[in-house]
Length: 194
Image 1 (cartoon, rainbow, N blue to C red):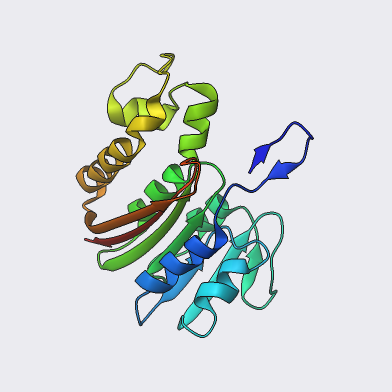
Image 2: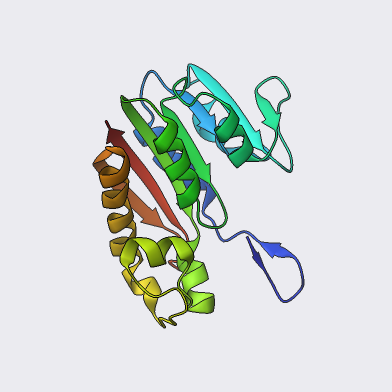
């Protein structure tokens, strides 16, 4: 979400597209950890009746006290076993790359599916500043201004996936993306194996 001039947050995502990608790439034996579950929109549209197991996490609101936990997602991932799940849904309004790194560092070898909603291109368009994670992965000075860096977002994402493989051994076997109309939010479906 971005803060608009009215002071209200604006959702720049495409809910239908996010749900369609999740349904299309959800494995039959899905055990889902939804780390930004919110009101349960993706649960209802993509996971209900399709996932063998579902756990929703959100620090602000949850949709079902039986299926969800009200807690910060980084805290949850740090404290809990990631091996119980084979599908990770990172539907952040910002950039969930650091959370992906944390999950993959902890997760035992196997085959997993990761759904990512990434608002990093919007941040690129608004600020032009290089974020710390990109600075490290791409070897770009932290304080450097890069106008138009959003044009290289897909390449930066690919470099991040190669960095994950180098650090933790997780090979990306399939990476499919779509984006919203303004190209400010990208939706990824990743099939990974270690």
